[in-house]
Length: 287
Image 1 (cartoon, rainbow, N blue to C red):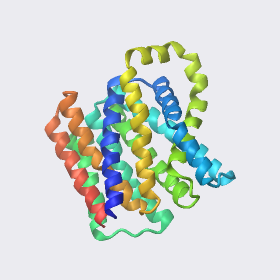
Image 2 (image 1 turned 60 degrees about the vertical axis):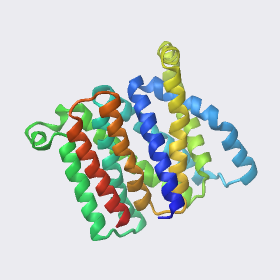
Image 3 (image 1 turned 90 degrees about the horizontal axis):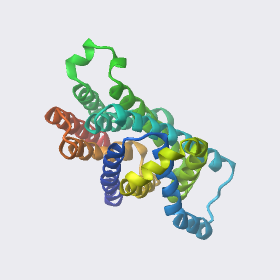
Image 4 (image 1 turned 180 degrees about the vertical axis):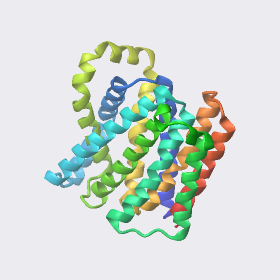
């Protein structure tokens, strides 16, 4: 991995952890997803339209299919993540989702893109699994049904969506050559249109969110696209099995934010588990 790619990914990690902290504090659902997505589409429209006019990328049927598919995957991702934050702590849901995502992405890259991990990478995957086990309760997890802990369920489902959209969007930017800014902006526009009927029915909630949480909403609207545009840019010239694990340095940042800024409990165990995930992710990236 080049230093430029690493710089993009580390910057994206800080942006990503920060917008998740803001989203956790707002603690809303679909109206919030529509609101920050629509604002983000408006904010980034001049940049995206400028790239389309200057670079004139090919936007035929295959590109449009991948844009709509990405929008649907990201809608599911945001809704699952917000539901996870409504029932669980940031320092649990965030590392669980972000930890399972790169592991599944690496497995998908092996199956779909022919990438072959080394023994070090496999050891990293095992370390991530062990850290997830520690994070979600250790041995106590075996003595209760998984459905009993909604935060764990939503964290795992969100991680699955992360892996899915990572592989999908990797193909979009590297094989179909959709510019990262254009892909993210287009999916934001599509998400806004698809969720608009729901937002109209719950307009009073949308107005209340804007009135009571204006600054956090604006922060998420700016940081969410920025974080992912940086990741998409790195994926244009870097294998997904390197980018997906490396970007999850945000796990440690997000867990620390949840433990210290939100005063969530069991901070030592969660930070230990998050650190184990980061070590596993480093092993995946080096392998």
